[in-house]
Length: 369
Image (cartoon, rainbow, N blue to C red; front, side, top):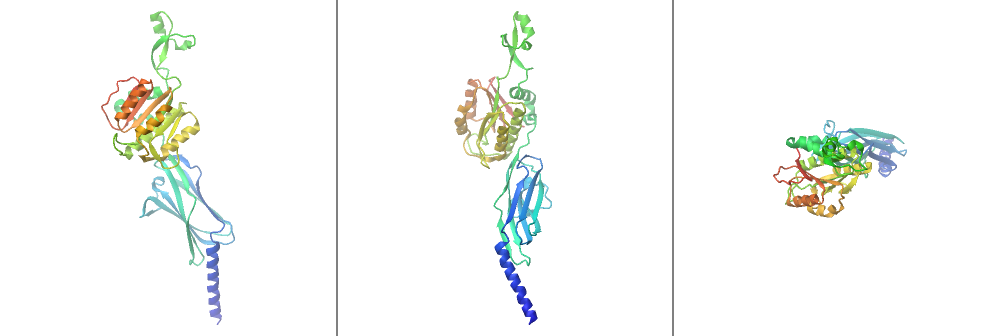
């Protein structure tokens, strides 16, 4: 009889415990996943944090959380599980218990190897003391991470056959060097005495000064066309990644040399980010450019022609226009000729070799490696 009563008591306790667990296990349970800094660059470590707080008396005997982490964020993940149904993510599992009013914090170091916009999602499982009751739910909040392309030396992108001339011209137009000048002009009362060209002065018998070969107070406007064909909607991920990486390096070079820089593209964005920002020298603008380059996808929302027709009227006289294209299309050719006629300086960086010549001092065509 005593054994029966004991068994009945145990069953009653288990039943009440399970019912109580199902009702209150997730109550006053706070779970957050977040980054110390959710903006980084390729190959720079970043810390992902998981914080769990049990703000009630009821303990949680078994607490399990599965974090789904993109493989581009963990290239060498020996302790991670592969999911046959999800080839893009690893599953990082944390198992623990939560006592009354306990706070648990866990940090994971990620090493992103590819630019992009990433989210970290999680699935939570709570298990009672007897292993009979389980509660599963997906975490509502996701951790966002923006991985910008790593800026490199712009010399690395220009084809070897034109690198010496091309790099000199790029740096002259982006960050003017007073060593380079295109000729001389008569001296003006506002000119600096240091700019006098003594050889020309001696030869011509009156004061002449050096005429520098750069636009006064220039700014840089970069356009990336994600199309990989001039007439059809084709996309080459290798070309797009190279275009993005080069644009990031060009924008970084301009910013460091205190040159206003802007960026436009016809690419879709993975996150709510504008597809154009006009030249500005502020820190906020270069951060916006990095966000744009981070979120660009391998497809476009419109043709290059429609995009240019929309924004070309916003160009200002001092803009240096940089086009990064797969190849020269008839529309690009005509657009460049028009810009040159308005005395804009235009750079075209191509992924595909071409034989089209402009024979125009305002236009330079170079090829990406």
